[in-house]
Image (cartoon, rainbow, N blue to C red; front, top):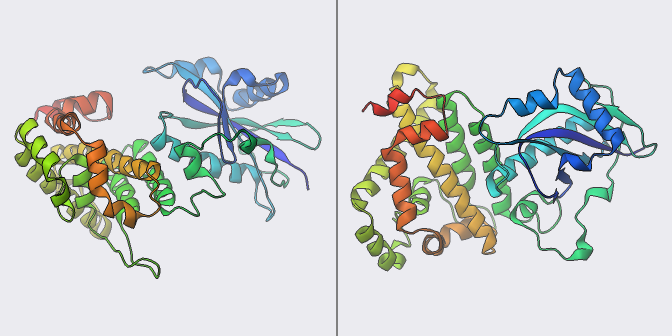
Length: 365
């Protein structure tokens, strides 16, 4: 058996350092060897692409064409390219949530370098015939440097401390899968559902032999993340909650409004999953409100998990128990007011987040 590195192009904002996350490496294009640059150029040409075309398609920021690489082990005969693309998608899911590396897209062009011979083969359209390889440590984190692992490395790591050992890391990984699918989804109904699934991936807790804690109420943790504590533990944060009531205008009104809207989204989720979806079941304006609400809710809940991992929590049950601590650490009047303004001004969501909505819809009640 021999070894290979699979490399593809990732389009998105320019990166300024190399990221090594488990078996994945993301780097700048300037580190390409001449033979690698030639292979990538040939591959892009075969797909009808050029760097000028790719950079020209991006209007909102300076586009970077970074490289993402991994070494593949095909002990069971799977295609290296298929395995690599699974890893790439998984890594981009997590990085989309836990770092500033957002809005990255995996492109088709790339190459495979055979490490036994040094031969490079560009990726062609409909590439399917590739040999088998096994794992090589060339892209592993250099542990001799004793560099602390960042959040993305913890979630993506295959070995301890890794997602197999940390329930929260695994939940964040599954949540990131759904939230990234929502970001690239054109159907607003599916966006709402995908974000709700992302929230459920974190907060739906079933009792196990080692833990009797269970939770099927995802709305209460969302309310905590938004800055509106309720239920168990709310008596522990009465001082800060009282301060927020004084500093945020119509605080209690908005607390009730948020709870009502989240309950409506949960009902919409259940009807859509069990009974299917029909356009006349919900007005476009209400669907826009759901889109905005789930956008903020998903981000806030994932932030709860990030903080939990930073504090050393390992399970969702621990995170549930320490919601008051997370509330004290992450919520202030500016946080709550920004969320409220997001609902009050849907036009900003349309302009800067989800431009496929008709801007005139934001003026309709």
